[in-house]
Image (cartoon, rainbow, N blue to C red; front, side, top):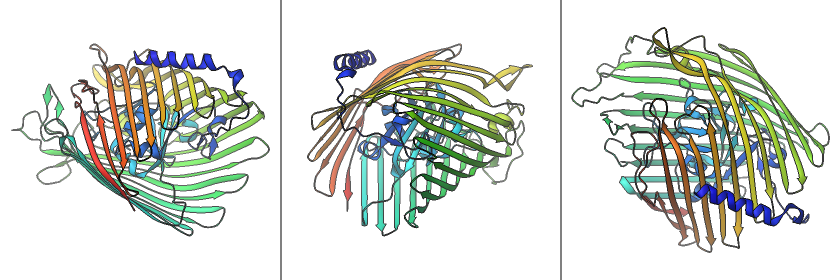
Length: 626
């Protein structure tokens, strides 16, 4: 199996080189991140595991969403799919993000945009069709709980989309990318970036559509992104940004239960404003933001002669204020303190298709909820010696319904050599129950408590030289109070009864072969005491990048083994290989041609049970810069 080959190769490389042979004169640059600490920090001094996918890698794969790329590049992370393009929402939807057996579909894993939480205010899960490549400068993925900094829903980790940086040089840059391919798929994107003195702007828009590979599975999306920035002086800058996307999706049902007229009309948006300060020994930011959505869904019918008479509608918003300040109090120290406030609103109801009036539905099928959350946190990091860093942090989080939660974490970084570090981390994560779980539909229960878990992690990362870097980590997760639907007095009811006990390991490496080639590889193994859907037991990925003159190409092979598509009384698993490729050719200084192929081995497989994935698919297009 591919993961065994990868592990064997890594072990051989580590054994044959030897740490004693590493020269002190190697000029190695650290990787800078913000997700694990709020302020810009060298990842070598953080006890948590963070993976960074930069703009170049995101754009070279020619994907409209960031999720397919991060699934390949982050060991232990898996994203569900059901079609060539579009994830959808509601019954049968894909786009579920799973990390180490902790699922974003249950709201246990958080997506951030510039450090701000992004999830549906009623159901608590990410809306995956919102996370578009056009707005991303890079994506930082923190594996393991991040609840100290980001609160509820970050119990399994976070995916932080860092939006486009201002253009450095004066002037204007415009890019237009067009593509078309299998199943009537079209993707189009245009962006413009301007720098004029202290002012900067980024504007981008997109349109995507496809028929997909099954009847009644069409998808159409359009949206835009804007970011305006101004440097007030050498120490202060401000910017505002907004992202709005609307998509129409059709749900075909599973192959054994086809659906008709199951259509969705979804609008999601994000607006935010930042005021940042940057001084020699301190920096921080004050921000306000709102993540909102409007959903209209036809539940559809199995009998096309009997259409439904109503639409499900919902409105939600997560509005917040966030402040943090980070300071170096003395040599080797970094203290970060912050306050977060969130107002979470959700309103679910049905309307008549004929009249548009709001319907009085029984059995708690409609509802409205307002929840508030306020928290303060502190993170203290200290370099005690040249080879040792200690990090401790805590958050006190008060929810207007579930009460107060104390969230601690602690970690060590030991650097036995200048080019490598051992990291040890213990951290708590939690998730407050959602509006749906507490108030909506018959299983609802107003007495629910937060879910809680502890994650313990040990990792090693080594930059052997300027060409070769590898890392490995072990983790153990223990959680209780998980919310599950059980039979209580003969009726379904949401109760805090579930448990999580997962352990596993992850390895990754990158090796530059000569001037033109680079190899990226990662592998992960997951053992779950209690199996869940959409969590593969093992994954492996090997990617080969080629850059020379006018050519840029990537070839990637991913193995998915023992992916659970059903658990419980009937357990089903899938195992498959996916071979993908992309190539770009610079026709002129301003015009490039590109092509992308997915599932080139034409594998027959399912990720969502009853939703076969397409065989080999192809896209091709043109990109123009001026």
